[in-house]
Image 1 (cartoon, protein in one colour):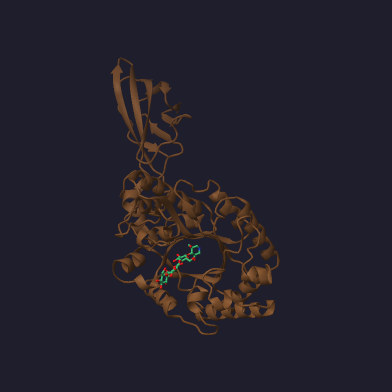
Image 2: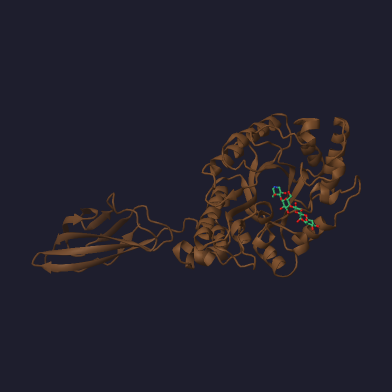
Length: 446
Ligand code: G3I
């Protein structure tokens, strides 16, 4: 719970001075700061070769975590058996460290972007297992202490939730997953180890398969720390069960993360579609925030000029929070708005002001206004005063008023006890007087 409360004074100040609950001013803060203040990481996939100029500046300023889009895949780092090439991956890890960012390592074992010596090889189970665990051990050791989370196994399942018959699944069965995780744990005990897949974002056959798989692995003592939900989504189709799905995995005792978020639309992008996309990005962000074990959100490329969508889905695109010229789109505001700081309950406080409104021989009508001077809503109020000249309340409205001797106590009624910060409530009364009708010297309000 605590992690959901803002801790950054500057962000809170921005929130309190901004309009509409502070989102306008707070949205000026970088996404990475807004996210950290809410207890999650906001990351992006990047292309290492583009990390210069405005692209680099935006990636550094806005995102607290980087994922290499391609540079850590098996085909990139070990194109030839036993010959590793770390240049592309190093560039991103070095950049992240220089800018105080975490790294999500993506990915150690995946059926795609494999070097042909693996995908086209003829393997005995033992030989493939040895090659796989060598690869995992070498890569995780290389970045020990520098990669925060690893997608150890990526996309292990078919659409119906059964084990994908990749070279790994077909040759080794489900056991390859346990072996990969154990090798990764041994190589870097501090790294968080994730199982990652797509189309598992909502509750359904594939996510049911993933859920059952994670349970089996945990029951075997396999060191699965987290489950990644890629969330390659379609405009207007954020699964209604996203939050519930994240939560059911979290309830298994693992972290969850949205690892490859993008929300594609049929081109051209229109103002209406971009607005819908803003709402969709906000909904995904809120779902993660609502689940305590959701570690963070990574967008799969932060700019439309660096997105896989147009190449893979002809006629679709505009899927990321920035346009091709690196201008933030409404989606950016959607994320920022959802991440806007939540003010902790502030000190309670109220004042009461007393007015004698009209007076006649022996009687008068008075009114008291209760003002909430705190930063949190009042959940009820009680006002007290002493009459200096024997006045007596005879009738009251909008408060329950009692008088004992000279002491008057007025308490809210069921319908006007809640007073928002800065708001007020008013009650009135009739009273009698003789001789003089001076106002009370002071009123208490609590
Ligand atoms: O590097 C070559 C370049 O030399 C060549 O000129 C060019 C010609 O097409 O291709 C370049 O390689 C491309 C590579 O991205 C780097 O840009 C590959 O063709 C292309 O297939 C590859 O696509 C990547 C895709 O994974 C492969 O499946 C995307 O960039 C990458 O964003 C995408 O990421 C995956 C995640 O890893 C797993 N989840 C799904 C996600 C989207 O497909």
